[in-house]
Structures are given as structure tokens and as C-alpha cells.
Image (cartoon, rainbow, N blue to C red; front, side, top):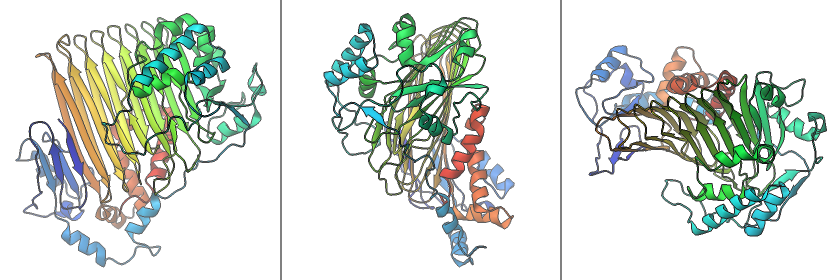
Length: 575
């Protein structure tokens, strides 16, 4: 089943399903306009599910919830009177209309777009077997790791770049980019004092202090700059508790048996085009192993920073939670505001043994390009977790606000009986951004459970797509899934598409799917302003309520950052 909802006006909504037939519903005005209608509220719903984001009339909200119609429906409330009122309305205080205020709200500069003046060493552009060998040699890897890379490169050569998603972009020239770049620094760093001060200053500006005096007390950070990890904080403290946390390069050298056992186990080398590319040329990333019956004493995190121009970043993250262990991982990323697109193709593998739990949280804030779509990161990522043991659990929580193009589907394979998979996501697109994101929940074991909450916010001329798969295999007796996919449209040019794929091969399994689309309009903001709430706070309030189910799942360390980030990204968004 595939659903697509696009807003080109406040009056009509087209909902298409591409299973056995196509449904085109043209909305009919309600018989009795109310205060709720005068707000210009737009709301569509699937499976008779209503989520009323903003209402000036609780009685009308109750009537809508009762809903006499059943099945797939799409409603739009009449707004002619409210539009006329807006056009005749005098300018608000400050001399600008609500429309002007909100458009300015979105035009703040990307504050992480600076370039650090740091001398780097890069290999020549181009991709060949020699490139793969050169990367492995620079990282001083053992022979088995080189063979892993060469096998992946051979697999990649046999594959074709996928074209099935909604995203559109010029062809990527894989021979016109650099695959490895590192800042010049001392060969061996015995302490942070030996790290280039300019590098430390860069992460200080990004809000990630690495120095002994200023570093975060309750979060261990692995800082990755271009193709290398430059520092890992609190490593000894974690090791004292039995937790191994270091760069993937160090893990290959210091813990080869662990890496050999789990690398490529969750995401095979030939899994997909970009996973094969990553397996051949991956540079650095993080490795974490939590032993049996151990709870990590602090959050662990990795911050990825691209600095060099025309350089791709291909990090690899591997997290292993042994029996009855727990770890919470945080991930952040930024890049300079270059006019030319750069490629980010990462692979993340999570492995959970019996009774273990991994909580993985991401705030993705790569450079998204300018208002005309020039520049920005192509973010093509493979993330997957395996609940291998009984009663294991993996939770993905992500806030996606950056990248010119985002293409990723964090997934969970629920192999162990009574295992649990969760996915909480907010994806915000603006200007010319394109996002094709979602998740896959593969139920294999008995009594497995999965929960999906996806919130998409589309502004400007962007397109935001949710694509999800829920699969109940024949062995998944008594498995359960609940999916909720909500979209919010800001302005008249944005698009929101939903493609839920449901495959049930066991009669005892149960799958529930709900979806809704709502729209922020100028009249809603005027309603807030009538009560003394300015446009910026009004947008923040509406968005905050819309995203609350996801935000409450984020670790406290990310809470302030996410609230600030959403405000920055949404300034000036409604017209």
C-alpha cells in the first residue's frame, strides 16, 4: 500500500493508494463552519484516526473525533472567509504581515557552516582497487581487514545505483571525490594535550568540548574529523567498568577478534549499493562493546564533522551489547556550507544478545544547501539492528533536519522471542530539501513487538517521504506492531508522501497502521497572536505538540539542542 498526500492549496487534498486501485477524494466543505474552520485548519486521516493539532473549538474537535465516515478519508475545512480576513487585515506590530514574519523565520544562517583552517593530508581523487589498498595502508590494517574491503569493492562493482526512491539528484561522479582526508598531527597521541589545538577549538565551537577541564562529565565522546577519530573522552573510565569504547580503527588493531565476529554480521557487505561502498572505503567511526550483565556507566556518543571540500565521509559504527547489558548511544553531525554537494554514506550495525538493550539517538544536522538548493550533503545511510537474543530490545530515535538529500531507514530484525523494536522519528525538510526516510521491522521470533512513530514536517518547496516496512514472517507467532505516521505541511508548495508496506505471513500476528496529515496556516498563527503569542512562539508551540511523542524519547543531553535546532530550522516557514 502506498499513500501520497500533497498540498497545493488549502481547499483540496489528493490521497492516492497504489495497491489495487487509486482513490482520488476531493474534499467537501463542512455544512456548519465554526471557529475551528476559521482557523484554516487542514486535516486528513487514515483509518478514522484524528490528531487535532490546534483547535479553537473543543466541541467541533469532539464532533470530528466521532466521525460518521469510515475507512480512508480526507477532509478540508472551508477557509474562504478566513483568507479574505487575512488579506484585509492591517499589518501586525513591527510593520510586517504574519506571512513576512514566518518567511523570515526560516531564513536564519546555518551556524555550523564555518570552515576550520586546518592543514590536511588527502589521497588523490578517484575510486579503484588501489584506492582501497591505500586507505587500508594508511590505517595500518591487518590483512584480513584489507581482504574484507577488497571483497566489498568487488561486490560494489557488480551493483547499480538504486533509482526507486522519490529523491531526484544529478548523477554522482564517484571518481570526482576524495575518499580519505585527515588533519596533520602527531603520529601517536598519548593525551588530549597532543591533539592539534585548532581541532580542539573546532569542536569547542560546535559545543563538543574535548579538553580535560571542559569535557562533558556524563557523556563519553568520540570526535571524528573528516576520515579520522581525533579523540575519545572517558575511555579509561568506561574500560574500568568493562565497557570498550574507541574508534573503529583502534578496535581493528586492539580487539580484532571482536571486530571479526560482528563486522558485517548485521549489515552484510553486499546488502545494498551504498553499504558495499562503505564496506570498501570506510574510514573511521565508533566501536562499543558492553560485556555481560553490565550497564554502561555513562552515555556514549560520536560527533562527526566534515571539513575538507570535495571529500566524502564514510564512517562505520559497530555497537555490541552482550547478554543482559545496556548502553545508550548519541550521534551528532555537521558540515561546512560548501556550494558543491558532498557524499556521506555510513553504515551502523547494532547487535543485541539475550536480555540486552541498545538505545540509539541521532540529531542529524548536516548542511542542507541554500534556499535555491545549491550545495548540501547527500546523506545515504544504512542503519540496522539485530535483536538476536530472547527479550532483547533496540530503540532508534532520530531528529532529521539537515542534508540536501536524506535516504535512510533504521531497521530492526526481531529474531529473538519476546524481543522489542522501536522507531521514533522527526524529519524536517525546508527549501529544496528531499527526505526519503522510514524504518523496517522484521518480525521473526515469537511474541515480538514493534512500535513506529514517524513525524514528518515539510516546508518551503521540500518533499518529505516516509517509507516503512512491517514484515511478519511465518515463525512470528503472536507478533504485534503499531505504526503511526503523521505529516505536517507548512505553506502551499511542500509535499508529504507515505508508503507503508505491510507483509503478514502468520495468521496470529497483528498489525495496526494510522496516518494523518495536517497543515499550519497563517490564520492559525493569527489566532495565537490575538492572544498575545507571537508567530515564532506559535510555530514552536504547534511543532512541539506535534513532535512530543518523539521528543520525549530523546536523552536529556539532546533535549536543549533539539528544541533550539527546531526553532532555527522553522523560522519563517509559514505563508
